[in-house]
Image 1: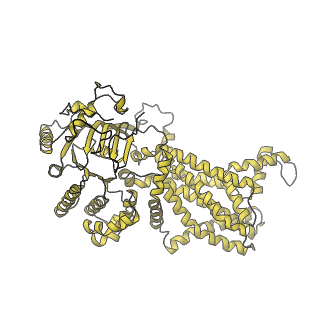
Image 2 (image 1 turned 180 degrees about the vertical axis):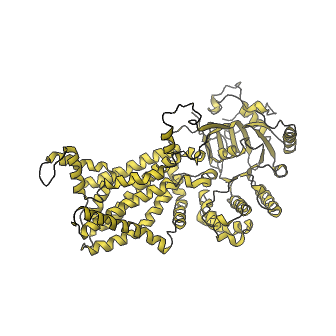
Image 3 (image 1 turned 90 degrees about the horizontal axis):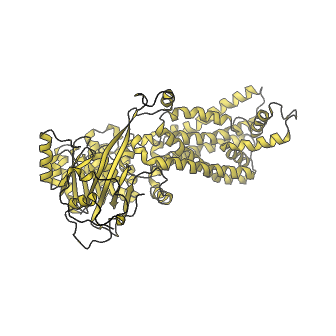
Length: 308
Length: 313
């Protein structure tokens, strides 16, 4: 094992020692400190990302709002047709809220996946904590999604919902979601370094993920779907699915990381407090995403310069 | 810790081809153990005292010991999941399967650079000069050996500071400066100087893709020399721009030298290397051929070149 004790340098100079990359995690403490030290770099990169994608113009920004809105209307029509006209304004609000939340994660992962390979020359010429790159794209995605909340609110009020004190907790929810998104962005960024077409496959995977989340369908519908699969048929309305199977299904749906977030969002926007399960599962998923994504990223980031 | 006994004074081509164990703590070495890296380092730092050494060599800014860097040169640069799936079932030795070639670019290099010293590095294309510089900067990890760097490092490498083509010159100054670890205020203070020195004029607020290669090089040079680094690593930057700018750049370099900065300079321009360097290191096929006075090393490098024996190893 190489010693990292410096043999040069006086008291007035910090000595950096580079030794062989043994595929281990770099010391997390100094890494995070270094990232904090360069937080302005992340912020500025996020701003440049927005600028490069024209999101700093009125129409560019508008597109980020209109895009989920239009898709929301498309899905609304589709589900309404499938259900034979049985949809209402409240369902549209549920749909839009879910889409906004899900698209935030989708965009963070999508832009995050190319963050490192797009770093190119910066990676080859400057030594800095590489996690700054997916952090910057996650921050950019966050800035992008702030205005969509106002659009959501418009539909929220139009559907007859009011302002509730629980909505004050939404920023906390978004903060946990941002941590989750950052972890997923580190994961997709690492995958893209090794497989450049990750970003081409990602949209399909994300779309399937969305269909399995309580976005288009409600939570109860998803639970029933899972229970039906477990039971090999039946329906809740007919009462031929055992209570225990429903119970099991309602737990299994939390294996989808988005379930907790979407359920908590629904609760908070409708004036309720989220269930304890919602809260602990979303915090757990956020922590897992950052730990696993961070581990993949940090143990490999010294190789990135060779591969971009 | 350090036991730089200056017994060997000439670092030959094979001085660096010792065993790979030099990264173990020095204190564990026996007094009579063969320590070529230290010996070579002693040769490489003429100012090193003979006795009464401190625990840490305070006057050394860069210490490279038995540095090996190899990278996987991926022939198919864009590895894809589809490609990987397509290759499933093919034999490993199939030439289509082995897309990765290991390039052992730096092979056991050891040297010291004293504080305030300018070390010139000469060698052919592919000798490992740029890879070694990136190793010193901490951008490419060593396979073996170690690099120690005392103080803030600024890099001026062949590709520019890491410029983003979509952003304006001004924004690139900001991103480059922040990435190098400067504060926003420090960058703001220097921005006018940088713009002035680079001489790109009104282009500074245009996207970088509108720049000529000379303008990019000048801006890159202005940015990295304005970082106020303790150690400056320069790769072929003096060739940027026209004769006027080269003169200006050389002046800036001399100013930096006067300020006691440590500089490692890679260049194919023997005149710049001879003018600016205190010592010159000749690298061939990833190994140190010779370290010494600029005139002598460059002369031998050039005559070896003439004799067609430039690539040793």
